[in-house]
Length: 251
Image 1: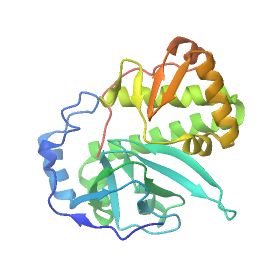
Image 2 (image 1 turned 135 degrees about the vertical axis):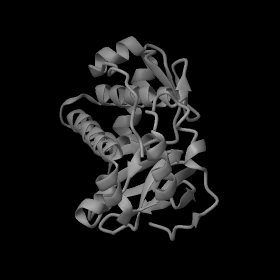
Image 3 (image 1 turned 90 degrees about the vertical axis):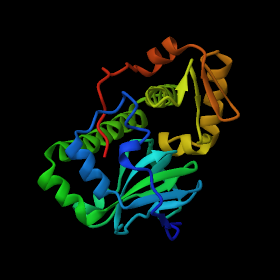
Image 4 (image 1 turned 120 degrees about the vertical axis):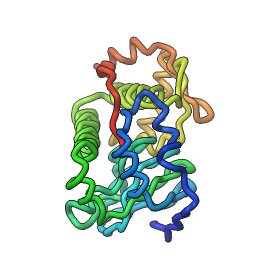
């Protein structure tokens, strides 16, 4: 359920943004940085399970994940849930409300999270006066579509083992670039139910598949840490390849 949001004005200055020092993200020009400092109106801090944006609602704000994890999902009439993807630091949330008036999915905090908050009505100023930032916003939407396409392929055509391998390798690559993973280890805030709901599997099937993968010494998942024991074989199983690295835009 979406909670009443409390936005604090005691915020991280965009010039001191911890994401900006990471080479994973592109560098802002001074003009872009000045605009972002005006565009940002606050920060939203939330605990796991907090609703950020609700399905079929119109949100007054847009968000960039500054720290923590969130997840996008749709809920059906019978209460079943389909997770669409996870949102990590640098991801942009809520642009759909600017284009279509309301969200067709919900976004909840998966871990303790900090979001940069932007007023939705000022997005048009970004598109009108800052074409480079407008391109960045478009890139982020296109990237999200790309990730959703990969997940759809997994749900429609991959085996359970291949689905899990692909998702975990994808997340590891992102977390490693964010300095949130390394040495074939990745801390994750999600549980097996989240995994099942994203990959279109039952919880029982997910659990049995993970146990078989652990027994085959491909990976282990204990106490919130995924450890890759044989990444090469996992990549073959998932038909996964590392995309070419280039600076990632963010808003």
